[in-house]
Amino acid sequence: MPSDVELIREGYAAFGSGDIPSVLALLDPAIEWIEPGGYPWGDTFRGHDAVLGLFQRAAELLGPDWRVEPDRFVSTDEGVLVLGRHTGTRPDGAPWEVPFAMIWTLSEGRATHFRQYGDSALMREVADASTPVSSARLKGET
Image (cartoon, rainbow, N blue to C red):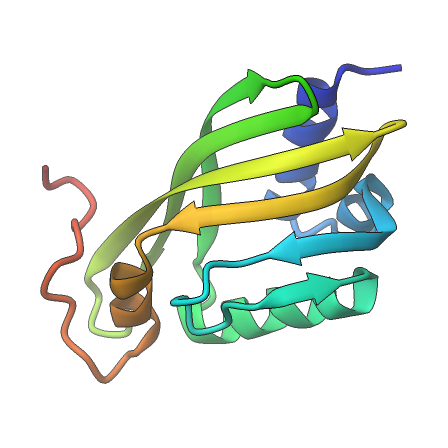
């Protein structure tokens, strides 16, 4: 059986290529998925249907070129910590990125719990196409 890190890496690759059935195969049917309360879609989601709804809502708000780009995978006692960035381009053409930390808990090769941490104020600015992004780190800027 692949390691937890390998499983989660494969899950990100599947998500990035739009292979949602493979993503769902990684998730326990009763997964608890927690998004930051300050995100426009922030809430706790339980089960595949709720997580699918979350994916759809985030994609609607972040646009067609939204990407989840993991940079580092760290094995933990119960699963995997992933550090990375959400990236995309605003309707005005400005590229953006929002760093994240995602914690996955796995049991018997399936993710049973997920929790994301990120800059809620920045994500709200990015998701609101009518608001200029004042504090966002634009891609390529430091």
